[in-house]
Image 1: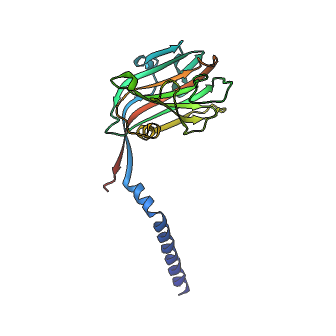
Image 2 (image 1 turned 45 degrees about the vertical axis):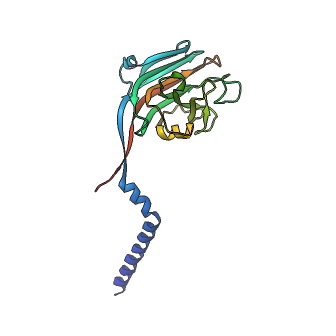
Image 3 (image 1 turned 135 degrees about the vertical axis):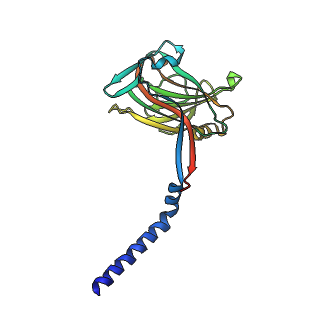
Length: 244
């Protein structure tokens, strides 16, 4: 009889605990179960072949950065080496930014940052050098109306900081990663382009995405920098309801 009562009390206690947990966190679990986020990949760059950069075009600003495919054990990636130079690699593509939810992801690593004498700043031209940048470009019929989101790896600026380029109010810089990376680690970034655009410009995009680019530059500081890029992927985000 005592064993039966003990078992009964344990069952009741367990039911009460489960009820409390469901009451407190039930809505969270319900949303998580019903909403499944899927990514429709439109273009993926694994940089796994020696000729992987042939489909990319180069824009030279001041001297040429050395971009090359490297293989290190199981890793394949692009290494960018800048010595007082600035040139970007870009790829033309079209993503619907007005009716869909575009996303971008990539991996990067920095071996060497440009040396800056002054305090790091997003909005001054004097030392506008960064070891790694990834761009999402929204071209307009009139070039001056084009918009650009520029994700950077800073050394000291806080992650999430947004600034306006010293060259154009239509270029917004977002600190996606910050820190000296002393351990030389690879980091993966996943960005919601629509959310970042609205946060940076205050409105939804009026133009579609027309290109993606990346760059390492050191022409302003006259120093050098070395970075690596890999697994650049662009597509659309969808939130599907689970019908089960």
